[in-house]
Image 1 (cartoon, rainbow, N blue to C red):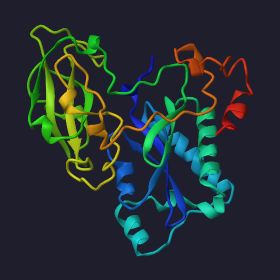
Image 2 (cartoon, helix red, strand yellow):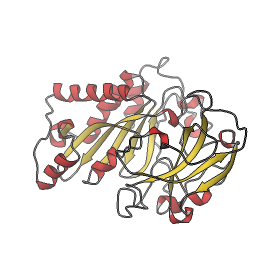
Image 3 (cartoon, rainbow, N blue to C red):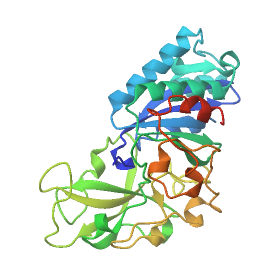
Image 4 (spheres, rainbow, N blue to C red):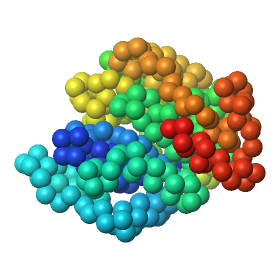
Length: 315
């Protein structure tokens, strides 16, 4: 089973209404690359998640090759705000004019089709102007939200150590990480680059004698960490997460030892909107889902090669 903890990189499609352009790009999880663009008015249209950066780079290359072969050229000049974005965030060579492309949906259609041909992705998601992602399709594995940790993964926790009062934060990011120790402050949170500010808010400690459960090697222990970045609501109340929150966000007031945090209205910044559904679910989902809405879908992509055309036409 593949779950979101295996995700390392993503290919994203974003667009900017004022400048009339769309951009494809790649980024590693938790580096805030998409948020950098959102500061300049970009809106996330969708993303494809991968287990390795090489896989993400291969899809981005395929997308850009497809665009250029169709005669869709990058937008390399614009107003003062555009020039400021180009010089500070960058990425103008991966843009395309929406007028020239026809529509944002057409661009996203092309990316999803290339992702389907690519075959190494974990899941594909479409966004709806800041609402929760709608998982469009998923290979024969369950896409799992990182906040949904089961009791088996947390059963060796002894306590949660808060470095900052949890009530100070409407949400924190919850993530499992590999540690060389059962207790104590994480030495290098997730081994991430320090190119972005990541502030540790709390962490879990394990009971004495807890076994090594990490797949990265012996004497490595899976522990939870709770953190925020410089892009989060606690640091930027009017930023990208003034409403909504990252996929790994949980309300810290719902966290306890051996209990995974939950998403609440407090964490979301308002009433949590209902999940976005599409008319025809992915043909793979019926094998794994108990949802009655998934049951009308029968077969799979090997047995029914026309599923993509029929399903995608319901978009």
